Image 1 (cartoon, rainbow, N blue to C red):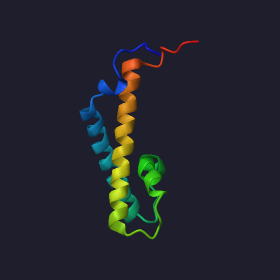
Image 2: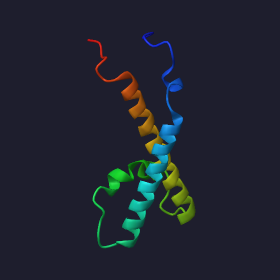
Image 3: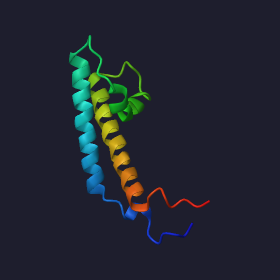
Length: 101
């Protein structure tokens, strides 16, 4: 267990993860706007692109007003994509090939 002297969280580049989170917000907004205005057409992959936001929204009622729901949607997108950026950095840093049998 004591293989690494430094904590994983100290070596993460949070700027990179924040940029990844901002891109997630843009992806979420674009997919939401497309899905909102193109009612008869469903965006392929919408449930995958907006999965972090849908997860956060699943804890709240459908009767929540639009503005708080949109804030939750964008926060969920940022948080989800931010964490994905952190996971990508951890995988790049430590790799998957270092497993012990």
